[in-house]
Image (tube, rainbow, N blue to C red):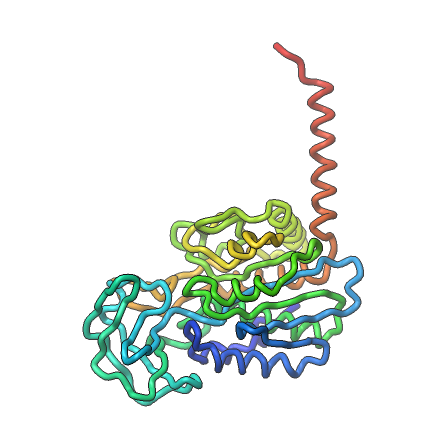
Length: 356
């Protein structure tokens, strides 16, 4: 079992905004480069691709996807521009910490003074803009944990990044049969740019299943602390029903075997995730996520606040991704079993149903 206490939580302290993921990429790459059975490469779009393959006969080939960026601000031609979905009312009192191109924090903090909207751009005017600044992140708690809650500036989508790193570490350390690929994608918050780039280089594979991992808005959609979510769909799409049924089958078995495992099966309509882009490319796609408080840092009283996920929810998600990577049945086997049940019911219907 993947131990929540041993996760590489130092990643939470690294600032990362769309197109400014350099330091995060290097940190993830460094962690994974120590694993003898994991192959690494960066595609031409800057996404990091990790592949673990060891004696996977009969197991489901998988690809997990999570993004490295989070909403923040970037400096372009002397202007400070918002990148990612944060509502204007929450920006008015924001405090920003600026970083160099290398992702190193600069001294001091800056306060938003006013906001200017021009066509599709949102420009923030601040009391000070250091000349070395390349991008900025909100001045919020980077990481904190207690018995029930994980708190961080960017749980979306560092819970996915950390989960994928931890899965690969566990598989490599224990030499467990599996065929797992992980995409650490860039610039998701501005429209899945890294994902689209990766898909441009990906040939359809009828065997591999693609699973988006996210932290998604709980309010109005899921019970925070009620279990990890098998995501039936997002705001724009409903995902592959065979894949969703397969995820649910594994989760149901886990629930019987492990009393501390909890899951919900829901459509999470608070946002759109990478699974939509991947599915539209013709790949068989499902999604899982953690219910998230303070989505995109929208805290109470229109103030920016750190995001929060349930510790128990995250533990359940880790249990599920390990199981589907290492244990049968495959998607095809679950579908065959489902069709047998439907055929039995069909026979019973034709045998017993009569017109009134």
